[in-house]
Image 1 (cartoon, helix red, strand yellow):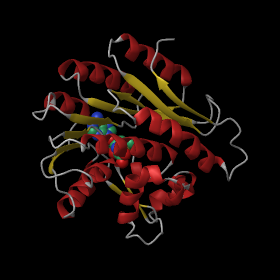
Image 2: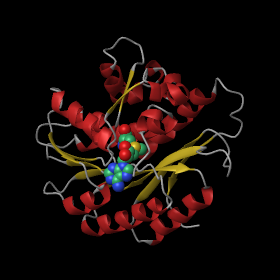
Image 3: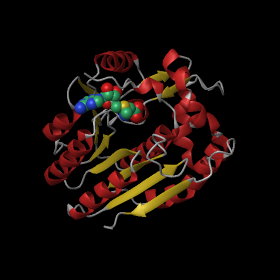
Image 4: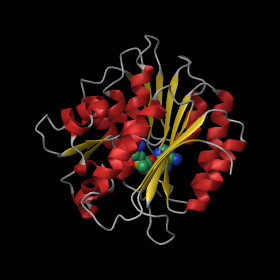
Length: 287
Ligand SMILES: C[S@@+](CC[C@H](N)C(=O)[O-])C[C@H]1O[C@@H](n2cnc3c(N)ncnc32)[C@H](O)[C@@H]1O
């Protein structure tokens, strides 16, 4: 039984980093005329009302997207364009798009999206969103099924070009292992795909362990981008979050090197309790 609902967390600092990476990779794939597939293993509802009970309960977006001003980020024009369009360009922050929305609003009619969501309520919301939106041009395949198995079924995609977003909620600890097993199998089936995998830093030792497993798996080209709003701790819940990107597009590293320090500055300015903030842009190496 799944209890996680992304509506409680939409637009938080982790979402911002994840969706910036997603938009950058999608923009890279759009540079060629050749079609590509977007495979979202954990799609969520696709759109979040920031005035809802869920979003207001923790108001995490106020420490994330709520602290950013698009005028300070000309290099993230597409990310903010999507965000502003769902807010009807009013300058108000009422809605925050989920990963399927960011990807679909950029994709073309020749491209294909495969969206997996197992929570019945979020799946229904995703279904409604994708059915009603005339802006979405790509072919959309919705699956109310396990995204890990779904991914392995789809690979290798007919297009031979793909972005795979793996964004689990890690509700159960065994999910880290499912994620790693799936990545290794997926990479064997389709080594040239771009894989973007989200992770929370709740226990730093676990992240280091996964770094090592990924590195030792022989998957050659992995980068890691991370944003931390406080020092690592066993008690505080998620202190940082990041993305592993396999086969990252040229230019992503440089872009993140310039964007991450700015994000960190904007997201910690208002709060003096953020004493041990950090960001990382790394090429994965074994420790
Ligand atoms: C972190 S949220 C996804 C957020 C979304 N990717 C975004 O960025 O807007 C994780 C989602 O995965 C769903 N989920 C959990 N386990 C799943 C699985 N094995 N397969 C597909 N969906 C799953 C949860 O119901 C939840 O909606």
